[in-house]
Length: 178
Image (tube, rainbow, N blue to C red; front, side, top):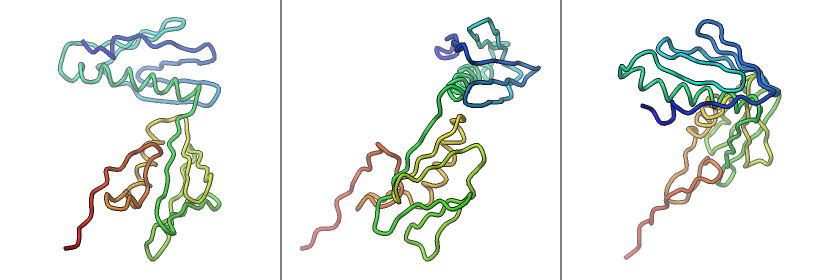
């Protein structure tokens, strides 16, 4: 049995949970998260706890058991506190800019790269080289941060590029002269 899947999820007092057929809606002080629950998963909702169960012992049900428990836990955390990722641009002339509803990346190419900021995300430029992405949806934060990081991933020789805060880049030793 899944170790993660069999743990119960605590529901905070200011969070409301609505289950309509296979659609789970979680309302909290910071917003609403909605997710569709797979048909192999059953939810038992008590007054202050949620228990995730599976219909049968098939391989697919076992795989989905822990996954959906984690998804529901992240949805509850998202409506009470926000998820954040911080990106740092390292390199000469590398910078982030926000103008209207667009994010501009100057990453050493001949042109700036432009992204439209999704409505569900809050993006803040603390400085020209530090970008904070936050939202109540953990998946959206991670996906958007990875899209931005993909523009110029950190290279192993000088460490130039876009990296997450706290990420360590394994450095390689360059060529030595004879």
